[in-house]
Length: 326
Image (cartoon, rainbow, N blue to C red):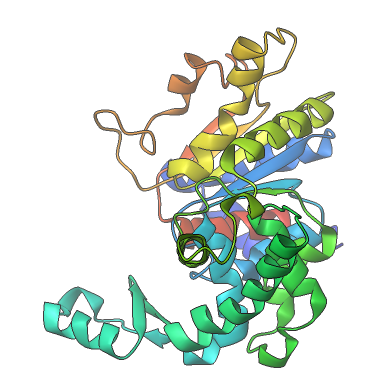
């Protein structure tokens, strides 16, 4: 690992001096300090960060041990792998704001599902994964075995069965980097994803038992034990990209352990940063300022807290670039 700053980091240090740019730098330096002092970091992924190809920077963060655990939506779990195996078949629609309902219907008819300006190809992405992951689900079901959603994905990746389809440099797949390290992942609300919907269809058709897939409650129980085992010393920081369940689910493990398990010596999250373009408004969790989390027993008064109110597709790679000394 380089000890000198690369041109991206030098540019940031020279120009990112005020407002959201300064908040980004403060958060990056706080993250770096947290790791330097022996802390661990959880990264949470909401939105469509995998389709935004965050793997180009996140995969290297994983390889360099700058992230200890990830919480992500089911969409982010699967969409990084879809990009790995079907990248050349994706369709970009830079004029997406001008699309009429008929234009949108035409995309559907051509088996494209749109995420902002990027259309995911159904046949090469969803169906290509489906036949391979179904085999793993069915084998587990037949053998009376049960695994978490990400564990099935890891098995599929590590088996090498997808290598025939690779369409990007595999070093840019964060899921492949995570699988190779067996990085802990929690996927709250996994059923709210394409693969989750597909799994549910097999359950409805009585082809696979629902219990073959471990549940969100089991993810929370597992995360509680992981936190207990990893929160000593400098503790575990929380780096949240976007809002929603990817962030809200795992951050609640601390108040659960303190209030419901009555473990009154459990430490708060020891660093907090959120990148979000959600505005602070009535009842919004994504737009809530970090201090609100103090009242829920998630963060302490002294916890370093940062919020970067910007587009995560722009600033997350920059922040990771700073940590990687690019």
